[in-house]
Image (cartoon, rainbow, N blue to C red; front, side):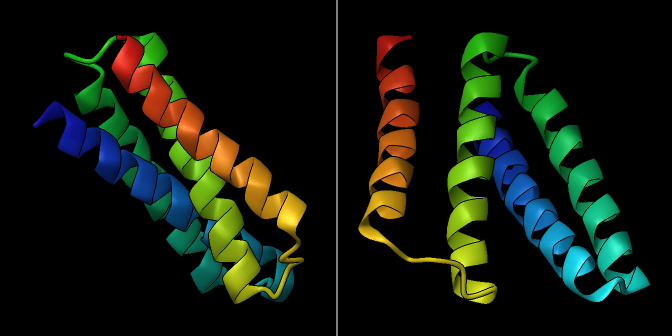
Length: 104
């Protein structure tokens, strides 16, 4: 269950970063509210997951999900650059996060 909590926390981080992008582009209060709710959701599930997962592993995976997922979402939603280099380095983040799970 702890890994499900960590995945939910990562999804909350992704949605919070995406809502931050919407807010910075539109300055709408609804985007700000969505961002706050997403980050509260994310931190709550991160807290629950870190009850059993070591912090060094849990925090790294949570950050990786947020960074890679947020980048991909912003490339899709805000038409950011979709260069090979960006995809390559996002791929490296994902591989590193998976690697952390296996060396635990």
